[in-house]
Length: 169
Figure 1 (cartoon, rainbow, N blue to C red):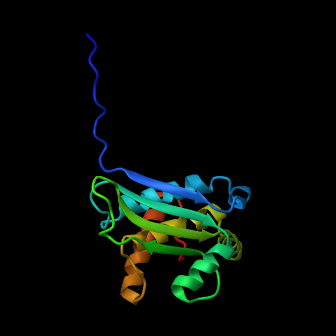
Figure 2: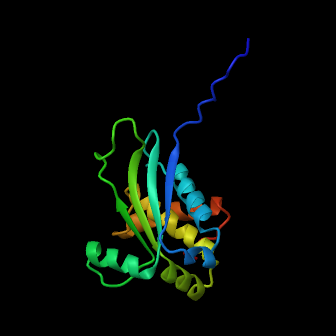
């Protein structure tokens, strides 16, 4: 008689959907999807605000035009920005489904332009922005100096764990 073992419980799972809206991300940074998954997973693992249970989020790798449209519609700023986060309504999750945290959108041209201007590796800058976006989905903000210090300290901690230098130094 053959015994079948059930897989050991691995704890809460993270579901990350990467929406490649601008294929030129892969020409500029062919590991963009993997970097986004790693950054988001690390941010969720390190945050004391990570909800219990399975969670899900979506990351759109878009271009400046798409992010500009979102920025204009939701923030009333008619310009592209590097990253936008849209936290989901905490009550919106379906029973039995992973808790959906929200959406993150990244603007390819802006991210790459900033990386060049700041003398950073594009992958490191993308990783930082995904970490930043995930922390916003978890309720972190930087509207006050105290909030900014707390959020930046957590970002630096997460990035250090990923082998990336302090982006604020």
